[in-house]
Length: 366
Image (tube, rainbow, N blue to C red):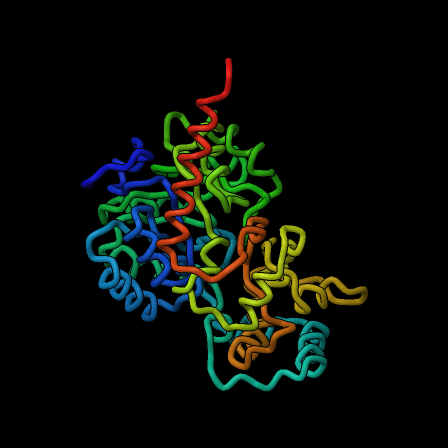
């Protein structure tokens, strides 16, 4: 690593990055730009089929050939070994099918003519194995497990020369990840977007640091400003993990109607729902999450049945940009999404804010 930064620490040196800012994004363009700006861009790949993932990881390296990059997968161990979309869909109760068809009609959603991950795949151990194979065959330097830490998976990533990271929401999860052999822990608090737990970030991070056994810990959940990055250090973390903030970057190129919804939202406009995947997931509130919370709505199904249930609807909403139903996983840091700007400017602001906060803390009188 050349030209170390004032924020460069032991974790940065270990991973070959300049600043301890980790950015998770469902866009290879965003992930590459974060790494080029000195942090570690983490491509959230859980929504890619295996062939698509292999191609995207090659493209990610072309976009960022000279800096480390990471990839994140969801690996829940509770799902069946083998599933077909048809077999899972056949097990969906009729009342749930009727409810989703009602959403098509209520919001005038045309049928999808293009597929996406939710309409083409269902999560299973077979799918995870194929995704993992694409990851270990790539030249990505860091592998992150967003949900689940199967020991064999971490061993394969390490054998491929990759650093391993696990996102955890409780000390119990951290102990399990460490027993599986993980190198680095991300303490992800309740404030976070996506699949998240029940402990707030400020309460969780020191607990994970205390049980980490010397492993580096990265703070995550609701972080959108440099003051929070500095606070992460005060809590004992060696870095900060951000996801929601990148939704407002020029490189992400989200649909205009979704961008408008994200920009208008505050921290109180995110909700935790099982309607997205079958597991608790924090998303920006929309007519979709509201519908599932209505009196008389069925309870969302477990993963992967919920995905099979709503896949065609989500594909149609995405393709036709049906504004009321558009949503995205987003944390309480959505309050810091105020304008569209390049990743490099976001990174520069985060670094400057972090440095200013640390300097102000040093200036406090004794």
